[in-house]
Length: 109
Image (cartoon, helix red, strand yellow):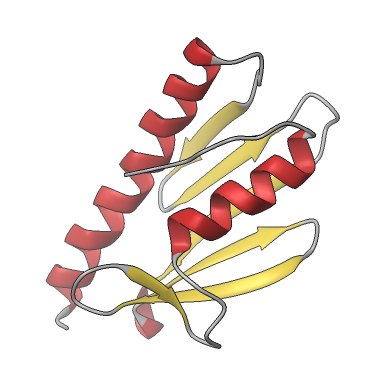
């Protein structure tokens, strides 16, 4: 994957997080704040816990930090997969956000 291809896929991912968060706030009582600064999106929940997603350009990875730990994702040509075999990005983000929000949340591209 070239740097340009990585940035294209990573931009789609970050934009998807923002759009998904906006949709969740419209459709549920989640009240999740999302703030983007460059290559980083921070999700803040009503209980003040956060999930941070940021780009690691030199490694062509996306890192996710949640209350339960830190995770690295790499694009496999179709989706962002955890580098240690822990699953797909959107499923993981949904699970971690649900845990931190205390209600079921489904993030999707």
